[in-house]
Each structure stands twice: as structure tokens, then as C-alpha cells.
Image (cartoon, rainbow, N blue to C red):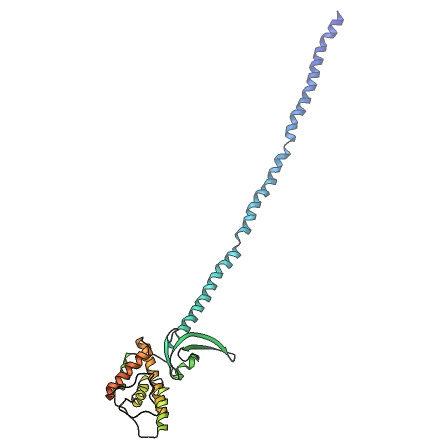
Length: 266
């Protein structure tokens, strides 16, 4: 019987063993808090989040925008300067490109260009004038155009005065021909339309008058051609038509008819 009593208390020993195993389970339950270190990685993510704003700063490039905005005004300034020069070139002294003018020594010409050219180290503005009939191109410095007597075509008032001069009576001086010839040449080369009309009037001869000498005929034809070319340009007709018109006026004044241009009169 005493032996049975000894075996009965062994059951709590199993409880002790179970009690001992319980703390072992507690150690297993404590392991999850040991996994908290990954939570410390959160601050490491903060610098990664800050990097994108750092990358956006160089994308703005304020310097590139300034240069882009400054370039257009520079181009506009050069365009304005070029336009201003072009205006000066096209309207120097009131003359314009593609405008007919009268140059005293050569008569009516056409301004084909107003250009800038360097001569002897100096920059000069030049009128480029084309004389189609003579097949000649003349370059006249702008600052000397007035001195040479270059002028615009005659207006209505001057043209009417020249026609009245043709209708007037010839005035021939009683001097030596050589001296009169010099005076006629000076009038022709003066560029004054009324003075040229005086030469045409004084040297005109109709069929009832004595024939001209060779030198007289040369001066007459030079003056008539100079005047007819300006009349034709103003009235927008041909030079031959202008010659016929002028000689018809002269013929009525002297009471006779003159040979048509191109005749073989001596």
C-alpha cells in the first residue's frame, strides 16, 4: 500500500515538465519584437523621397531662358537698323530707287540703286544711275549730287514755261559763232529745261530758212533730244513722239514745216 501512495504524486511532475515548457514558448513569443529593426529602415527612405525635388531644380535652367529671351531683341535691333539704312538709301535727298532724274551732263537717267561703297578707306553713299540710251551707268556720291545739279523731272509749271519759250521769237546775238556755240553748250549742259528750250528755239530752221551749218545742226539736235527725252518721260510717251510734238510747235511759230527726225538734211 505505501508503494501506491508514492506513485500518485508523480502527476504533478508532469505538470512541472509542462511548466518548464511554458517558458520555452515565451521565448518563441519574444522573437517577433526582435524583428523590429526593419522598422528603422523608414528614416532611410526619407532621403530617397527628397532626391526628386533636388532633380527638378536643374530642369528649370533659368540661365537658358534668359539667353532665349535676350536673342530676339538683338535680332529686332539689327532688323531696325537695316530698315533704317534702307529707308535712307531709298530716299536720300528726296530721290528714290526706280525714279527718273535729270543729270545735267547726260540728261534723263534712272536711279537703279543707292548703295554704300568704300573708296580710299572711306565709306560713301552713292546714287547708281543708268542711262539706257547711252548704255552707261554713273555713280554719283550723295553729298555731291546737289553740286552737280542733279534734279527731279520738271513739274507742270516748268514744263509750261519751256513750251512758252519754244513759242517765243528766236533771239540770235550778233557775235562770232564760236562764242555763241559755247553759250549754247553751256545751256544744254546746265540741265535747265527752259535754257535748253531757248537753244532749240534759236537754232531751229524750217524749209523756208537757210540751211544750218554742221556744228549748228549738231547743237540743235543735242538740245532737241535732251528736251524731248524729258518731255517723253514726264508725259509717258516715246522720244520720237515728243520730238514730233516739239517741232510742230516750232513750225507753227515760224510759219513753216521742218523735216521729220532722221531726214538727210544738210
